[in-house]
Length: 151
Image (tube, rainbow, N blue to C red):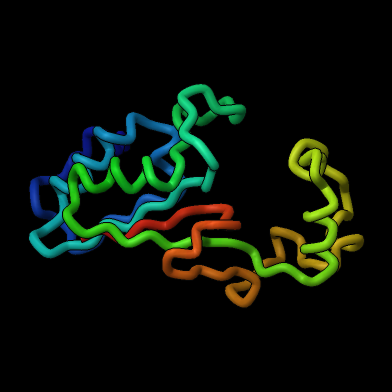
């Protein structure tokens, strides 16, 4: 299904959810389309990677545009009067925080090392539970993803 041209009548849903989608498509069109299919008073929940600045040529070859939080919010406010931002991040052990701070060159993001969870003391991504993730209102600094709740 094309999120920029949904095959549903206007005002079809109370909630529309779009996790890690908008960076892959024409985001303004997808957001307007979500607003179209929402009933009055409905809620749109969307997330996107948290990046320091908006890029129309991101490193990820599958992303069209990556949005800085303030640009993500501005984009959403074009269709929704109320936008609340939340930061999502993995909870870290002391060892993970220390290793992240020591990695000033960003090597951990560029080189995948098998078994790194054994070194860092954290769970593998496939073993994460809700207790391993923090979603906090307004906590954008240090977030890996930004979640928006729009009305």
